[in-house]
Image (spheres, rainbow, N blue to C red):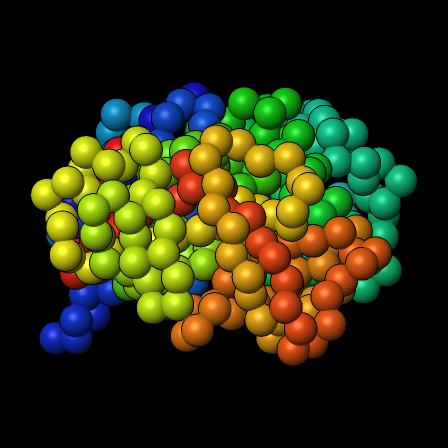
Length: 363
């Protein structure tokens, strides 16, 4: 298999500001790495540089211990699945699968074996004689995956392959891709702007913003200990609540209320007396009275600004003075718009960030 290593990789078009800046990243052998970030953050450009479809401006890229900066795409031992299915409409599924192998001069018997294996893995055996127009979106995406599988590459590259599918099919296909990668044990790099997709699929995720790498870690590591405000806001649904506060004698004084500081952060806050911080509170760490809590708590009374019904729960958007807090409640007894609702904050699960640098304050 293959390790993919990026060292100080940068990309600039002409005299414009760089779109990728100093990326250092090692993708482990057989790992499923997800590059995630908002549109325009540079994740697809980074993937295309790994593939050799974009030249790098600075830095080095290694695949399997070999520097590939000047190696053409066809010689990098990679296979790429694009956002568009890119299938040949006049060819059958079988012909789409074996076309690349024919171009490489693979013997006919070997082509038949590889196509048969891929079709079996992806459930395409009954569809081999159909043309793309006779397939559903999910079936077309499986054919695109099959075309990559038959090449037996060292690295799979996925560029937002599910973005053209409806919500239900996306859930189904991301499960299929994850199971496929686990079965094939091929190093994989997957690009998406969907943080739910990233969290559910990746062994590790790399969060990018404005061409810079923000954080790399397992989904749980990134979720529980975001390194800065951007990551904290980007990862999590509903997003984290942010409240500006001032450190004051072991408390966090916001505009409309005061919270005790988390016990684990008190030492770090001792030198920040009177200084501003950003308090991050995940919606799931704010609960209605009577619900089970963990650690120290503080009670707030909020004014209800919005109620979002999601079926098994409702998301309450409340306010206290100028501060806004969203949290989840049981759907069977939601509060009224404009009414008051009590909420319990799990203090020891609060996240704290420096108001100037936006970096996490270490506990």
